[in-house]
Image: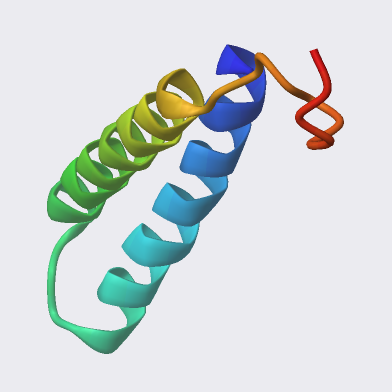
Length: 64
């Protein structure tokens, strides 16, 4: 799950940094900062959501 969240976070971060770089007049160093901030934030959100999931009943039938 950690590897998947890192991959998804980096893809979102790349899209965000390239979008900001293309649509605004930021320089390359600021685009790298947007990439790092967005990637880490997205990764932390995915990991927090995965930690909050309940895996005790994977089938969902509530039969013990």
